[in-house]
Length: 487
Image 1 (spheres, rainbow, N blue to C red):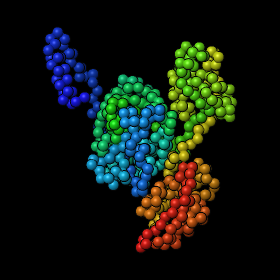
Image 2: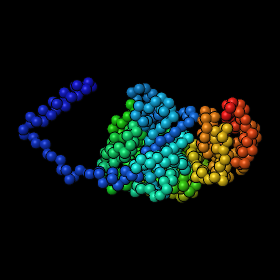
Image 3: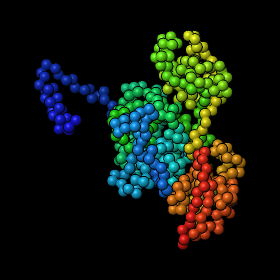
Image 4: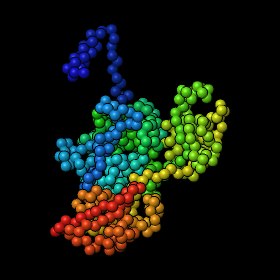
């Protein structure tokens, strides 16, 4: 609609109200409206501005442009789920290719910071800026792309202010909530709104285990990873995505429940990865056709279409055609309710599952398995130990040793590989290598320790090419590094 028409309509509306003498608008009760100033003053010092640097050529098209919700048409008018990424105002093209901005918040006084994985994904260097304008280098302790969680750590030389963690399970639609973050690089921007819905499943293949909090809090690119507060000043969510056809806020925002995030944080701290439960079934919504064919009263629950016979569900006797009505005493309103509940279950736990079969309800006890781990997750808990690190200035990278537990997680054999700890120069950066890549061979020589890497690279000369066999996720490839003459 033409802006001038909008202004005209607004003026007409005002005149219409003013001309009605028989209807008096009741003034709002000021005391009933929340005052957010205390929450902001208390918590802003614990919110940080996150900046991720990329010295190579990372594939950032998905992070910068957002991505289409599955099943939605690929056209300019389609609504899109977008993860927020902000840039400084008026960045140069070079800065746009190599810098990303986001938000985060300090969860403990010793410097642990929580943000989104997509804010720091594959970054070569991460820094955070505090409210007192100090800028600190942050270490990525670990990430979980499936939950879109990243745990950072900074050393500020003293105790830092931290947020209070709330309980996202107690949230209800209509509650006031508040966001603090860095939209478009404007740090410590405060916006407010209400919880629009809870338990939202967005139908994304890589985030099936998250039931999002939906709000109408205005948030934009750069808010990613920032905290969502309740009226008690407690963090109840992490601002993560918006629903938009422009990439900017259009009234619908989504946050990761803090309960999910803190569960991931605890696992990243203790074991370096996040494990999720596995029931062993494939489900679909209870459609109208299923309701009619099975003569059901309604379409609640999840219809089982396939069962892995070797899984906990298979061994407990769950069959295709069963309708799962409840999991671990949680009623299922829709099929999308099931994956988040299963994912939060500790592998090995035994949980009751209520099913409907041939019109009769029954409850079976299921031992929950462990879902396959995310191959793109990062575990840097031991990074930074001088005894474990080494580097090659000529190649522009440094490496650290891997313990056998980490090798097992990565699908490697004992004594195989070293992990790139940092990209320190242009040679490695220009090749596309990243921190977290595992080097298996140097010039066809197997590498299993820092000492072996040092021995294989100590005689690298200017103009020579070193061939590395590199493992990233579950794929391996050869990458050649050529040292420029005179370097």
